[in-house]
Image 1 (cartoon, one colour):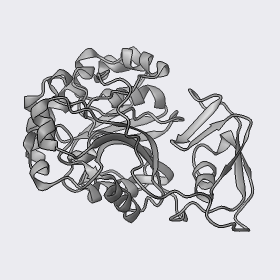
Image 2 (cartoon, rainbow, N blue to C red; image 1 turned 60 degrees about the vertical axis):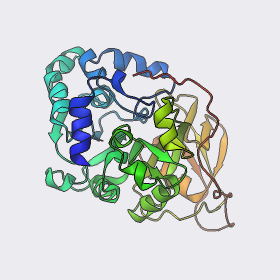
Image 3 (cartoon, rainbow, N blue to C red; image 1 turned 90 degrees about the horizontal axis):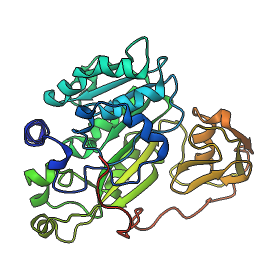
Image 4 (tube, rainbow, N blue to C red; image 1 turned 90 degrees about the vertical axis):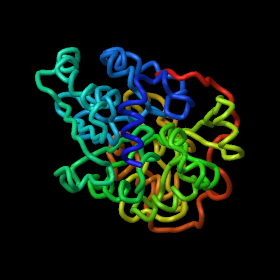
Length: 347
């Protein structure tokens, strides 16, 4: 599978226009705050972008970020602007042709960003074998990935390596493709479907179990959309299997509980997080308006208090009294099933 993916992204695809589905392109509406960042990125880099989401979480100034499957470097150079000169971004990819494009434009971007020093590094390697790249334990604040984990033949190895590399309170914030059922072998082994990020997609419930097994106890879904497969022949091969692009955030926090437990806690968002000054979005079910008391479960309370978000919140309560389950979090597909919205890529 490694050789298949390297051939597909290194030789067969010359630009995002060569993709045959919308799976590996971001069809979400581009937020206004991100447009100036992308406008500064060299067109040769953006032309070879194959992501499926936006992987730029809030509050990255001065942080150390790792991008898994960075390709030609579009997200690396966007993140480089957000972390600033005091931060750094390391991009890892196994496709030499993609990294050659990224490396060729490092000095261009340093000058465009107005930085006195280069704050990006690119490494050739496999995201399942990050231990072979000399990256130290607990050395990254945030790890991102954009439509790449599905291409890995050993997803558990990827998540375990990420957990090792994250600092306590750090997070894996990534977009990927998921299926509403386990993908049958004839689809998993189809070279085109695999290259288009469908064949290697995990069944969403298998992903949740895998994430928890690797130390990420309470995965949080940030946003999702159904994937449109418009090519008739490919749609016929896929049959009834439905695919979704989804963005998750997985915090490295000890002591999180398997369920949402109620301890009578609440938070008040003070405001001020850049791009989310009046309304902070933790995940799909937690949008917190500034100045209002927002009841939360124990896990959510910890995700805010024990991470970089703590200075922006007031915290009410503790863990001294338990009131049972906070809310019913189980049952059914977590993604929205309505097709709706834009279907053309903005890459």
